[in-house]
Length: 304
Image (tube, rainbow, N blue to C red; front, side, top):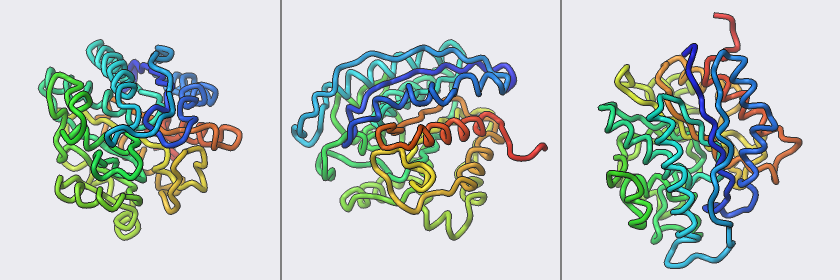
């Protein structure tokens, strides 16, 4: 990966979230020196600045969705930006923003894979499975719905965002670190047969075995997309998120997860979402996220 060119795409919105503040995420990552740290790893980094989109009107849900039109507008901007970088042969890092933005980024990645004849594998690092629908959601917040939308369960404007609907199939996902799934959502995830490695499984089998299983079948014809929700991490080490769930991976488990993804050599796009500086302590969560992203790009704890 020596001369890989990375593009940073800031998406400063909390349009799909239940708390304000994830809109400040991209700047917090820049303050934590993400670009410079990746350049020290021998990568070329282009910061594309921030995408533009509608203001968050902070309204209640309408027909089961909050801010649907605004969510569509932001995701269309994400789709275009990510697709452009992939077509140019660069590795896009989408700096959110909340997790609804993965609808745009993963739709773009899926279309790129079709154009290139590649298999897609999505590693979804998250405390939540994000498979809610308008019927199942307790809140209407679309950041709880991206996986469902990508798999074809959701409003037409989001399901048909890319060139192909549904953008992906559930078997492309490996969800890691899951520990909070809404009641109605459990049924949906089971029916869709999403590959889920929840915290109990990580406790029983260890992060190493879980990552081996999640990466099984990934080869030179696979585009590996990592969608990293910061609430994947235990809130004891990563307080800067709007939806903390106790009992997440420790620092060491998270490092191992990232190092094993790096070892696969197949990661070709990345989302970093749900970093919320309003809940953080002195940007500690952003610094930790930068540290883990460095590990995704080959920083190892040992000299091997």
